[in-house]
Amino acid sequence: MAATARVHIVMHEADKISLTQKARKLDMSLAELLRLGGEAYDPQRDDSALDAVLARVKDATSRAEMAIDACIADNDAALTRIAAKKAAHKKRMAAQ
Image 1 (cartoon, helix red, strand yellow):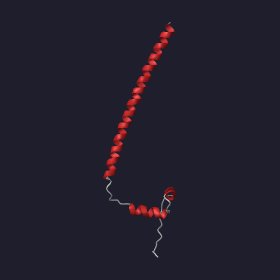
Image 2 (cartoon, rainbow, N blue to C red):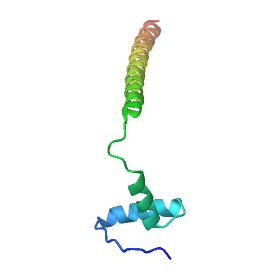
Image 3 (cartoon, rainbow, N blue to C red):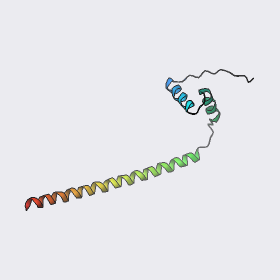
Image 4 (cartoon, helix red, strand yellow):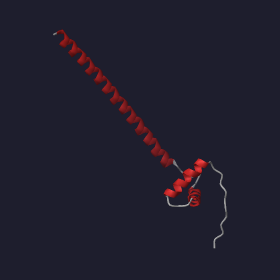
């Protein structure tokens, strides 16, 4: 029989609830989730590939935001032209 040891962990109640819910979703105990998380944690892990992907996502998001802003500006200009044409038409109709 394997020897076990009890470990007490202090955390906020909200953290405990969140981790317990995550463990339930994964069909495991809170202890198992914490053990696996602790075993997987590596502070020396090289995140350069993840950082490169994040940089590309940020760049794509920035370009998309600029394209959306340009579309909004085009739409605003079109609405302004339409309003001017409607006003001119209304004025011509009133003059008749």
